[in-house]
Image 1 (cartoon, one colour):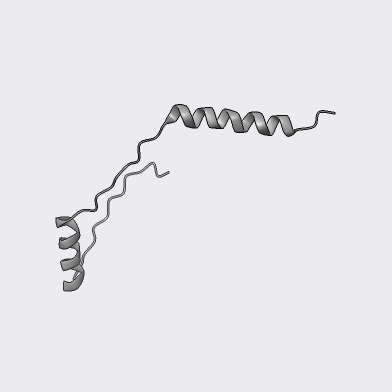
Image 2: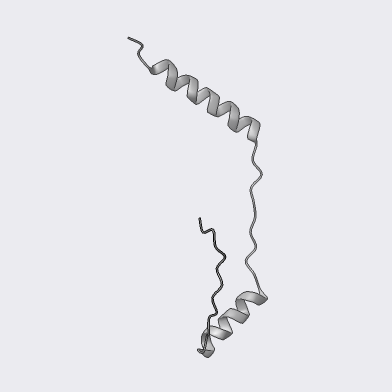
Length: 59
């Protein structure tokens, strides 16, 4: 990860690119975040770990 802030100026001269930037800023993408069941995921993870450990052969 960068430890220094990024500060650089960009110059856009193409009219089509400027138009697209304005359109993108006017209508941002909608992001949906799925709800997660952490207890069920944890339970499943423990179950898989037990399964993996039971498959190991102990000498």
